[in-house]
Image 1 (cartoon, rainbow, N blue to C red):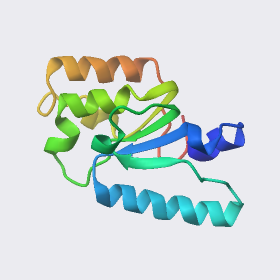
Image 2: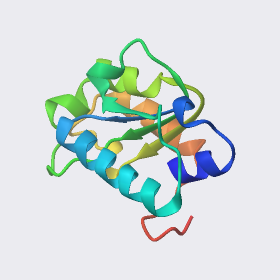
Image 3: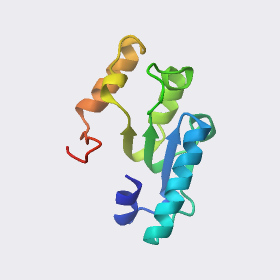
Image 4: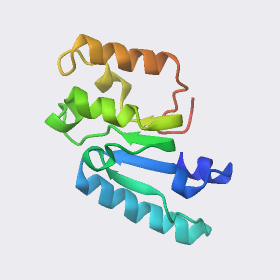
Length: 133
């Protein structure tokens, strides 16, 4: 998503990536730096941070990472306030990275949260890990 935005002329300072955990932020930054070096991309100004650190900020393009290595959502990915912050930071484009079955799971999210995810999924273009839509 970042590669596409940059190749379409979006400035790196207009892109933000939000993840629930510091460890994810670190891994994302490492991967971005590697891709930047390999492809001569300018990522200066691109913000990668946790949901908590992103409160009060916006970007044209936001990528939200809802992936989790746990089978069940943790307190960070399942809290409504954090979900709201993550989803409301994009001015123009929102990209959600995650498992749609996880986001629709009634066992972990309340009905309002599930309805939000269902609406987002309904109006979204889904892309599988394989790249297939």
